[in-house]
Length: 256
Image 1: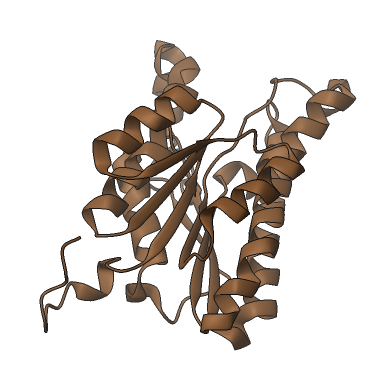
Image 2: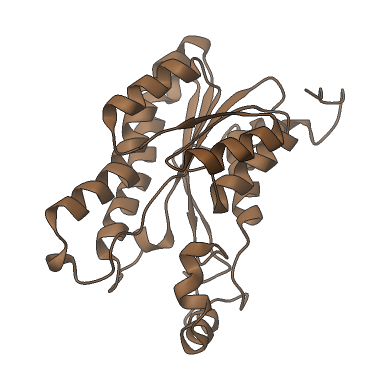
């Protein structure tokens, strides 16, 4: 592990000597976050339902990997035993669910959407925060979406779970702040991952969406990873309970 250079002004952005868990690490934003955290010196533990892809990534960056169904509470409890003490928790894993009106969502679809998107960060933070508190420091980074900050016709259920993630971070910030633990949220816009394929491969839909974004482009997974690094590191040591929107200006745009 590379040690930070003494008096290096960039040292607050490094994670040397810190243990970090990233869920949903096999691809997309999770993979980009894992790679950046490894470069920043973290001791990394990775979790994903796709065990083979997660292990392949872990081998390439010197991390440890575990296959976990994040909708399974018992599996989460067992994973916490595996990871031990942590300095950084990144709950990145999420699912969009089936598009359509909310009233047509089947019970099992809603239960899994809720379990993966909201209950997994709730359970993990509840299990891990007490051990962080024993050492008087820790950073919890949760992944939300701009879908949780505005109305959505196609994936309203997803938006509800992501709105809950922001409230979860606010609650965690208040509960655990006196113990030195910070909790923050990233709310990405349209990012160039497999999730965005339906939009990006449709010329008309892509033109419409990018026209509603001030920077007129999609984001890159690495740009969300850089935000996660900032929130995980000491560079953001006085930031907690916040939802940081990283969307190229979609949320603030009037579409012109």
